[in-house]
Length: 312
Image 1 (tube, one colour):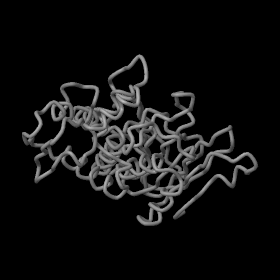
Image 2 (cartoon, one colour; image 1 turned 120 degrees about the horizontal axis):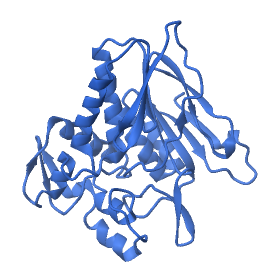
Image 3 (spheres, rainbow, N blue to C red; image 1 turned 90 degrees about the vertical axis):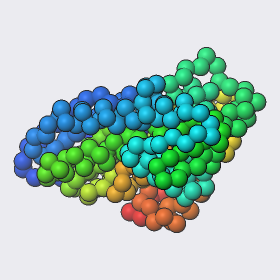
């Protein structure tokens, strides 16, 4: 499902740096912005070129992207995937299995009717329309053999909840090839660092940020208190439960996952936000993940009581 919320990460806390000066470049990609801080100069044109290549594969907004062409491909006819799309889709299917379907790369039909993707809607769907869209939802309605995908229903892939993480990992690989000693890469709030850096996780109600020290790691955050909407009199995040097709009314404000792979951190954070705090903790323990969960506060609870850290 797409991450249309504002990712709750910022860079107001100082990184632990050597005396060498820090270079910074910024730009636009994948419908959002990127910031890269390095010790030593990098060739921004190579970064922009690589990001353009990734966007041409994974964009749900570009009707000429590889992903869009796969979605337009007829039911029952195998379509060959590029190596990059195959890699990300294979990882997505694995995460879907690990999370009991709370992460699903085939939510495009639901995302469209809710207006969370490239299709804008004037009003939110009825429950009957959601049920109809569910008939063309779930990656289980497709088969992946070798490098070919075959759809058994008119499913639409949407990899917005994992593609930015993949892009971060790929830019890190590019910087490693250029032998950049230290860096911090951020795309749409998804972050990967080489070396030691301190990152702040934003908290609700203007509380102090949660400082996280990263060493050669990634962090991805999914949350619901920046962007939400009201439906049937209740407040919801722009995060869908793949099992019901309905927006999630979670007991979580945000989930942050620290992992060597930004792609996986991105996907796990989305899934945990959809499943709620109890199942999120169980998943973190099963997969031995580093996570920070911020719960919605009870009336009599303190700020500290609403933060759960696992593996840190």
